[in-house]
Every structure is written in structure tokens, then in C-alpha cells.
Amino acid sequence: MATERLVVIGGDAAGMSAASQARRLKARDALEIVAFERGHFTSYSACGIPYWVGGDVEERDDLIARTPEEHRERDIDLRMRTEVTELDVAGQRVKALDRESGKTYWTGFDKLVIATGARPVRPALPGMDAAGVHGVQTLDDGQALLDSLDAVRSGEGPRRAVVVGAGYIGVEMAEAMLKRGFEVTVLNRGEQPMATLDADMGRLVHDAMDGLGITTVNGAAVTKILTDRDGRVTEVVTEAGTYPADVVVLGIGVEPETALARAAGLPVGPHGGLLTDLSMRVVGHDNIWAGGDCVEVLDLVAGRTRHIALGTHANKHGQVIGSNVGGGYGTFPGVVGTAVSKVCDLEIARTGLREKDARAVGLRYVTATIESTGRAGYYPGAKPMTVKMIAELRTGRLLGVQIVGRDGAAKRVDVAAVALTAGMTVEQMTALDLGYAPPFSPVWDPVLVAARKTVAAVRGAGN
Image (cartoon, rainbow, N blue to C red; front, side, top):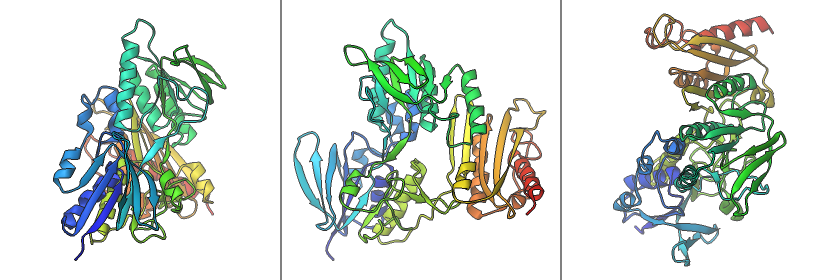
């Protein structure tokens, strides 16, 4: 039997998970695997970069799960610092640029995996490319930011960091800058930080950030960045005012890196990500798969596709793709939109739909918000926690949960994620047999208290 060739574009979570799983199922004489990675690193935790920058993770290499050498030892022809610049779908080949030598060449494939990831949103505004302005998506980005911080700290002037955006990346990088000894201002164009939460829950995050010494300015859309004679950032100008800055971190979010796929005519969805079926095969192309931050996935609650850039999904995509490429079978059914984060000791979690998400898909709903603690109230160290729950009117089907608090608040969202995936009602949730002991929970866990209150809201709303 002739040897097939699998080409993988992208050497991080989805791409190398797919390559590794395919190799487990098929030996080299049955499947040749060639992988291209344009950066310096493979198989690393991009989600860990803020904690490396902030000093919680001491060494950059601690974020690397598997080096290029380790992949090569497993019979994967991994070509580093090599960028795929063109995809010829009809001819089943890719054009690659060796960034070190400048040489280009074509490589044919029988099967192709696209795992090109996402790129930080960088608005086309004056000064966005100035020295001292950093997006943070790769280890190379993280190292450049650390170098910039060290340069500022070595001087005698002030240490002022401005973070543009107040989503997950923004609040995590604000904490990192604070730990590095910088005066931190977060500029947010929205009503409250953490737009992945409803505004009432985002307000809790805002108040906590203020209490930590982080200045958060809402309704502050950036219009331009000013620089000195050397082209280094000095100020960030917004509709709300001007803010001095020695370093700027962009935490506006990311968007799918699909320029290569678009140019080749592959299908993309409303959020710019590649469209795949349940096997992660690109729609309309039997020999091309895609996974990770460059794809859209099905939201199981809303019934629509969405773009979610998370390493958890990327690794699952890779496992599914590798199984299918290697002759096995796997599917990725979709997500419920679970995410957790923190800023210092404040934990932030959400899953399912926000109020505006429910309205967007035509769902009528009720909400309930409760305040509780993560431990029994009499147990030392009990900290406050706020839980907001959203349920469908009449049916009582759980639609979403948001949690803001301390002392283990964030991981409680996993209970809600399971309930969402199972299609449970809030009344069914009240009977869940959750673990209890005073050091871990009150007699009624905060999630169950919220479910009981939401049941009352459903009943009170009537028909």
C-alpha cells in the first residue's frame, strides 16, 4: 500500500495534537507527516502567557508541552520557522517559505490539516504599530513584551502600563502588569469590563479591579497612539481622554487566522472561522480538516456557530482530527461556552448564554442572582460569591450561568456546564447530589441556591 502524506499547517495545540494522534494510529510507512510552524515554538500554552509575564510561571519553557525535537523523535517531519504562504486545493499542495533562508518550495499532500490559530485584534489606528505596543498571542509575543517591560523598568522614569480592552486577555494582562510593579490603566470601550458577562456582573469585576489599584475606564474607545521622536509609545488617546503610557498591551481579543484558507476558497462562517462538520472536516472537502482557533464551532445552547479561542477546544479538535486521519473515528459535537479567568484573587466564570445572547436567538427568559459563600458561613476563610442564572421562560431550561467571587468560585461553573450539555432544567438542577463539607461548601451550594431562586422566577413569570 502506498504511503500517504499528511500536511499540517500550524504547530501548536490543534495541529500537533492531530499529528501526534494520527501517528499513534498509523506508522511512518503508512503515513508520512509533514508539519509547518512559522514561529520558534510548538505545543505550548498560550493561555499561560499572562502568568509567565506576571511572574507566576518562572520560565518560558514551563509553558511548552512538547518541543520540536520531541515531535521529530515520533516520526513527524516538523519544519520550524517555515510559513505556508499559499494553498492549492485543486493541486493538493502547499507553498512554504523558509523564514531563515528565504527559500520557497511546494509540498504535496493527500490529507491536510489547517490549524493556523488566531491573531490579536489590532485596529488600523495611528500608532498601533509603535514600539512598546504589544499583542500577546504567542511565546514570541510574550518575550517581546517582557523585554519591553525590562527596558522601562531599567530607566528612572515612571512605569505606566495601559491595557486596551477588558476581556479575558485584558484583565489577565492588567494583573500581570500590576505584579511587575506598573501603574495600570485599563481602557474599555464597553459599558463594563468582561463583555462576556452581563453588565451587572461586569460591574462586580470593575469594583474589584478598582479595589486592587487598577484604574478601569469604561466607554473609552481608543482613537490613536502618540509616540516620541524615536517612535516609542508615550500616550493613548481615547474618546474619553488621553492616558500616558510607557507600554501598551492589546487585550481587545482575537480573530481567526483564516487568510490562507480564504484565499484558497475554503468556506468560512459569520465570525470569520472555517466551517467544519462534526468530524472537523472542512465542509465540502473530503481530504481537508481544520481545528483550533481558526474554526467556528456549534453553540449547543444557541444552536448557532461561534468563534471561541481556547486551548481546551483546540486539543480536543486535534484528537478528533488525528483519529479520523489515522483511520479511526471521532466527532466534536460543540460547546456551551464555558470560560474562567481571574484578576488577582477575584475569580470570573461563565457558561451558556448571556441575556443579550438569549434575546438574539429569540428566547424568552428569566434571571435570578444570589449572593453566597464558597464555604459554610461559620468556617474560617469563607468569601463572598455572586451567581447569576438564566433560564428559559415556561420550560425552565437552563440557558446560562455567570459567577464572580473568590475562594474557588470559578470552577463551580463546571456544574452548570454539565447541566447545559445535558439540557437540564433549573428544577432538575436543584436535586443534584453535589459534594458537601463545611470547608468546601455551605449546605446548599451557591449553584443550587441560584437554581432554586431561578425556579421561583420561572413559576412566578407564569405563562
